[in-house]
Image (tube, rainbow, N blue to C red; front, side, top):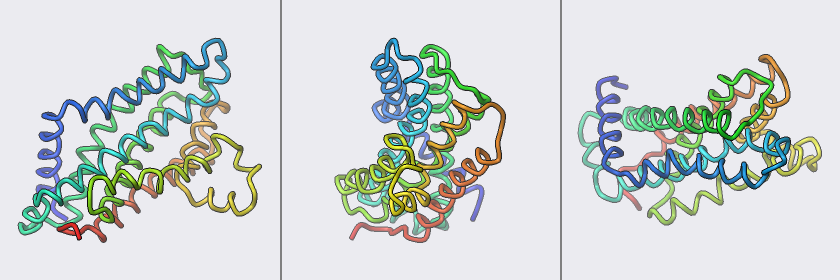
Length: 245
């Protein structure tokens, strides 16, 4: 791993994003629009919005980051950019960490905008520290980015990369406890839920809306989200290919 090459990769990715206003809008504006839509769906039912709003503050950024990063990395391969980069003294981990830094900066802005909007204009009421709500939203965005980079190695086209969204994310969405409490699920489904990182993201958001202070379970949830993101990045570096099949 080389810090100079990693930072150069991050600068290149950010420069590409700066010239792509549609992608920036998808990353920064769409989660805010979806949260605003959700708030007005529950107009007059503030408690219902408090119950699901925090969870979706973590889920929407994860979905968007997964979609954008999986397609962005695959485009590097299909256009031949990735092959040219890897002929230079640039390691796979340098490349993925450069992507992680660039999209991590975007995730930071995304989490700031979405958290400020949700806690401010939309009036989400939380019992725990608001800075932790921001931290969980940021962690979820980084997790979506890492999963997107990982699955890009298994897709041959951008269309296939998009197809991983229902295969990788939707099962987590169904089993995360948003629709049915995890403790009320069948044993097998509960076991599956226990190994999926989105379950811990939703648990962390739920704890913040109902419990003041910082509990050990909340710290555990954050640690699982961070570990899952790092594991996905490591697997992404191990499985990264120069060319599509």
